[in-house]
Length: 379
Image (tube, rainbow, N blue to C red; front, side, top):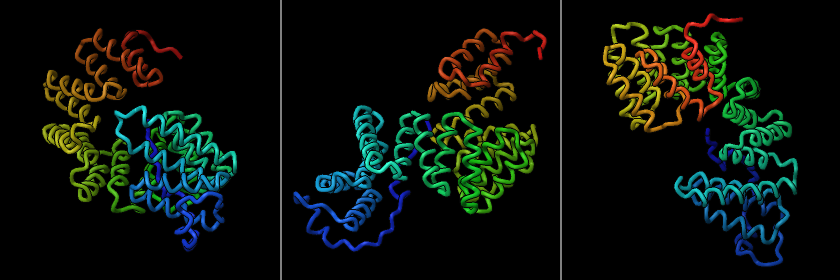
């Protein structure tokens, strides 16, 4: 699940109101209904507290305000964001607490929308919450409503692109990111994400153009150079990929994606450099604490090419022990087993992938090819 991080700074009200009556009224004196300016100032204060990781005090502040102004949609919206932020910051082992926080956050956002159906920030917040819960269709529906309310919002279309991508709706994600780049062509994030998706659709020319734009707009961000390098490498230009990988490593020398990609580019350019490729994959695994899955696959492939099938299999097994649900690693392992002449084991491995990710096409294609290796292709 691709997780949205609830960012209180995303919605900036900028009211510039002076907090005057607040000092007297924040104690929650009964019967006081805040004036609009006072509520706006209180929201600003709550956001500042949230940005300083003071979520619980901000929650108390907002709940006190709601006791005197229960029909203020913005207060419900910000309280929902606050609770969602607490959920994302809670340790994963406290699952029940996380679920309760999200459930209450959803109630608050829905109350905000009941009071003001056109409240842009509430639709965005609710969309992010649903995305974090893996409820992709609901997330997309909410963010689409936000886009309708503010059709020229860069952030809304960017978030829509992320939600669609998480749901596997690549073409819709491409449309959303294209819209985002049109609204704010100087923002590198949408260009970079659009480039990656266009590459997946084999639109190499446009993908390289978008990636180059992202790198120019954010020359000190290693991610933009890595995206450009990866797309260049996927296009078959290993030599052209080396320079942007080097640029990324000059900015962040221990970046696992850059280390692993650079090692792959070296081997793609010159297959005789397997030893160097292996070294860079090992570096990527060390710097990522063993978390960068592509490095396991690349290391395994290089080891197998070096005539070390036992060591290669060990890398696949290590990766699957860390993340048994990674379909890319599982599929690569199945293909490795097939190449090693262990078709029965390959079949078991690929079926495991499809049990967990039934729509993962690379695994289903590999299994189909395995089960019918000699059958003629039909149109």
